[in-house]
Image 1 (cartoon, one colour):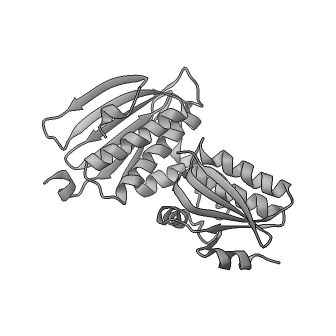
Image 2 (cartoon, one colour):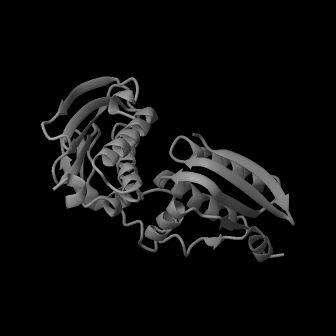
Length: 115
Length: 163
């Protein structure tokens, strides 16, 4: 199953609802393009909702990191929402859990972005 | 789903059903493509399931095999249509042994940067070998001149091996 992205805006934050797999050749390029599109439209507060991501490999992890640094370098913030246990465990193993700002409640995540 | 249900393979070298129903060996030669990566991941999942690994361990084995396959296809053979990936899955009484070999320039595992090092933590790549080692009990590299063969071993518990 390839990855799908739905974009919505809530209080100035762009939420990307991702579903499917983030792997080499499937979701990794999709994320890159989606984040670039958001930045190109002038928004740099991005919340990646990973609640429906069934699987992620090292390429997918790399894309999340690249998206994080791209947004940060543009002066914005990228946060993660609703990690599944598998994704949570992967971020723990790779010591990235503390790099990302991870939220498990959308409202709390939205209000945590700098105004 | 049986291994034979997986689909069209470029070449199937051998499949051996051993006398013990909990042991088996199957080998493949595949194109250097992402499709091969997905197929090897799928087979790994099936082999791990048949070997009796638990639901937490099966996806770890499948991911380790996927990462090894990505290394072979992408970093080893560089998607070269003239090069192939050889893979074998062997279930013995005490282990699942997966071998994946490419025809690339060779991989020196000692030269792979530590992805947990502070200077590497925000790199966009370089976590594949780390994840393979994290999820498998033993990982061995063998230089083939040309190419690299990775051997991934996951030990079965006595209950899984039927002992």
